[in-house]
Length: 364
Image (cartoon, rainbow, N blue to C red; front, side):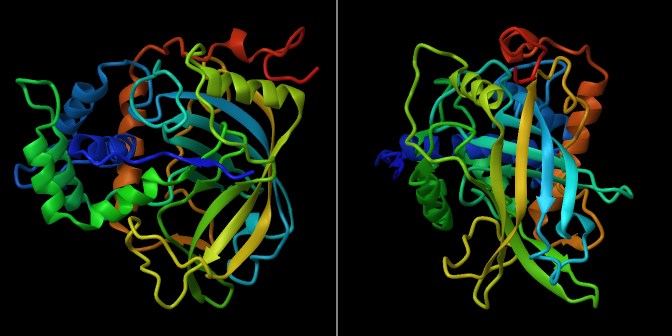
């Protein structure tokens, strides 16, 4: 069934709202110091900026703060083995620890259809060549470089007098950054599925598959659901409906996604995550992800994991996309900050994830 697009608004402030959640994503990626000139913002000052946007929440991840742990396995089928020597892409099954979350630093935010959803995975083949990924349900990233992110931050910062962005500043930003209007429109018109289980998650950044002969192939990938896709539907009476729905689904049956690898075409831009690739690019079905259990982060196996996208096995390498290095630095900074803080009680508690009449996360 076709999903319903989110209808865009013509006003400048509404346009800014289109990229608000992806901007929170970008904030989480880009507080590593030194990028946001001319004032040479430091890691500390950027962390302060995050607190100004989403408040102070000790012990939580600084981005994607509201989440839940999942476990299962990935079964490679060998279809991508000709492009990459990574063991996880050969035929065989490897265990997976993962996490579903909402973008942003607010750990108790209300669920809503248009909020950016993420899937984070740690694939663990024998020999320690693990693969970590943080993938999101938007089609493109809203910025292409840290410098351009600075422009977005300056344009969208709250006016002290109103607590809201200045419309004139937003208009000026749009005038000198017309490329963002294209990215914003793609984000606005993305299909909205009913929940985590029937959503598609994308790498956004590009990577290089490295073959046994050293040949490098630029790729992006996505996790495409095998569950039927149904349209988004708001649940105003349930603050945590997206997570409750995921929990109910996993107690009832396993959930599956196909790992679809997209090979860059001749005209695709490799190092700019704000630009989509051609729809007729070659795609490879590389295997199936199966998730079977769900746990609260209060006691779950994903709690201490940083899903750093630069933790890559032999056979997969980063592209020249500058956002990748920023993401990696931010993940480590976030982990260091929360590691020294008391473990908090998350919004999704062990009681919520427990199966009826059974142990947490286990299907009866």
